[in-house]
Length: 53
Image (cartoon, rainbow, N blue to C red; front, side):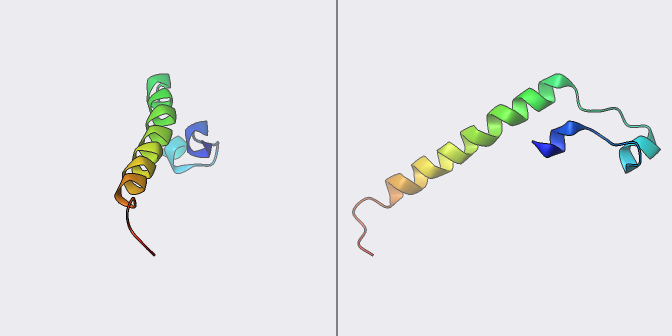
Protein backbone atom coordinates (compact mmCIF):
# COMPACT_ATOMS: atom_id res chain seq x y z
CA UNK A 1 0.00 0.00 0.00
CA UNK A 2 2.97 2.30 0.41
CA UNK A 3 3.34 2.39 -3.37
CA UNK A 4 -0.12 3.94 -3.64
CA UNK A 5 0.79 7.02 -1.58
CA UNK A 6 1.93 8.96 -4.63
CA UNK A 7 5.06 10.89 -5.57
CA UNK A 8 6.95 12.95 -3.03
CA UNK A 9 8.29 16.45 -3.53
CA UNK A 10 11.78 15.14 -4.46
CA UNK A 11 10.73 12.14 -6.57
CA UNK A 12 11.36 11.30 -10.22
CA UNK A 13 7.58 11.49 -10.82
CA UNK A 14 7.52 15.08 -9.56
CA UNK A 15 10.59 16.02 -11.64
CA UNK A 16 8.99 14.58 -14.80
CA UNK A 17 5.62 16.19 -14.05
CA UNK A 18 3.72 12.90 -13.83
CA UNK A 19 0.36 12.96 -12.10
CA UNK A 20 -0.50 10.59 -9.23
CA UNK A 21 -2.50 7.45 -9.99
CA UNK A 22 -6.26 7.91 -10.43
CA UNK A 23 -8.40 6.59 -7.58
CA UNK A 24 -9.72 3.65 -9.62
CA UNK A 25 -6.17 2.31 -10.11
CA UNK A 26 -5.58 2.34 -6.36
CA UNK A 27 -8.91 0.64 -5.66
CA UNK A 28 -8.23 -2.01 -8.31
CA UNK A 29 -4.77 -2.73 -6.89
CA UNK A 30 -6.18 -3.08 -3.38
CA UNK A 31 -8.70 -5.67 -4.62
CA UNK A 32 -6.54 -7.57 -7.13
CA UNK A 33 -3.64 -8.09 -4.70
CA UNK A 34 -5.49 -10.06 -2.00
CA UNK A 35 -7.67 -11.88 -4.55
CA UNK A 36 -4.63 -13.13 -6.45
CA UNK A 37 -3.01 -14.23 -3.18
CA UNK A 38 -6.11 -16.17 -2.19
CA UNK A 39 -6.28 -17.76 -5.65
CA UNK A 40 -2.68 -18.97 -5.38
CA UNK A 41 -3.36 -20.32 -1.90
CA UNK A 42 -6.44 -22.19 -3.12
CA UNK A 43 -4.57 -23.68 -6.08
CA UNK A 44 -1.62 -24.78 -3.95
CA UNK A 45 -3.88 -26.22 -1.26
CA UNK A 46 -5.89 -28.21 -3.79
CA UNK A 47 -2.71 -29.55 -5.38
CA UNK A 48 -1.29 -30.78 -2.08
CA UNK A 49 -4.23 -33.06 -1.15
CA UNK A 50 -3.17 -36.71 -1.12
CA UNK A 51 0.55 -35.98 -1.15
CA UNK A 52 2.71 -37.41 1.56
CA UNK A 53 5.73 -35.44 2.66
